[in-house]
Image 1 (spheres, helix red, strand yellow):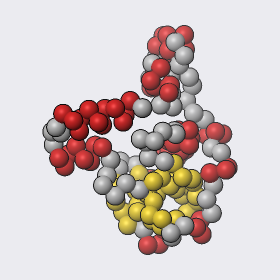
Image 2 (cartoon, helix red, strand yellow; image 1 turned 180 degrees about the vertical axis):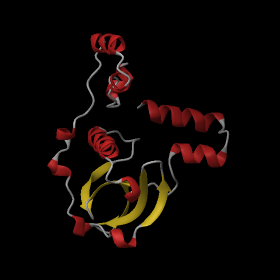
Image 3 (cartoon, rainbow, N blue to C red; image 1 turned 60 degrees about the vertical axis):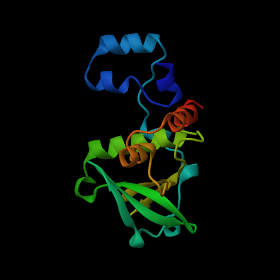
Image 4 (cartoon, rainbow, N blue to C red; image 1 turned 45 degrees about the vertical axis):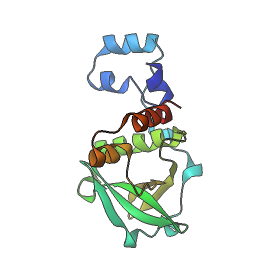
Length: 161
């Protein structure tokens, strides 16, 4: 449980969404917290839309409800995540996306991609993070397959910090 809290995850989110009050009570007794609200978005992370050139964006990843683009911000390549235009008007998707932004704002760790800020582009929220040209640990594991023991230990130590 404490690892979830340190990572900024909200352990009551799932049981609350499934209306499982008994599990919610147990989690609260052990430090569980309520889901992040939309009011937790801090304006200090707001980036003016003119600082990011979304017109030259290159799509690098697509998910069920979002797209990630490679863009330039202040001359640096960064990743820009936004809701797919086809579902951008869905209130539930927007709410989930805003909660994701609120979570990203709170994550600070040398081995976690850095959250940079939020902007509004064509009526949609976009958040920027560091861009990893070699991909995530997951991408590396998919490409390389099984890792040797020293590399595995090095990754495990980095994750544990």
